[in-house]
Image (cartoon, rainbow, N blue to C red; front, top):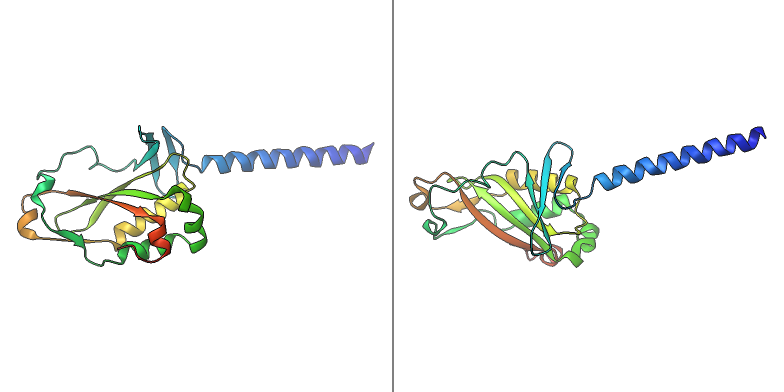
Length: 180
């Protein structure tokens, strides 16, 4: 009798532990219309009509503001280091992880850039059932802000406060090294 009671307690403890692990794992997924915490950053998600999640750092301030200059004021822009974004993705994601993400095709990134070309903020658009975790997004955002800069012409950015550049990054181009 004593042994069966002991076994029942162990079984109940295991069930409790698995329930907690499941809850924590689910809490680390991105889902529509939610607020999700990574390590240091918090993200809000909204769904759009294209079956995608739009993911914003809750501290972002530029996404709802209109730039002082029209986007058409910029005729020339490119990344200062054409391989910087590829390096960022390779820093954040292993080859195995990128292969896992291939069915999602890619990630759409809006870069909010100051007149000197520094990335101030980013937001992301991903497939609604993405495998990317909030922690991976946080790492991606941090590395982009640190390592990706744009080459802008001062005469075109004069009087501007920020500019928005968008790019769709295909995971297949990260995998084959052709992302620029």
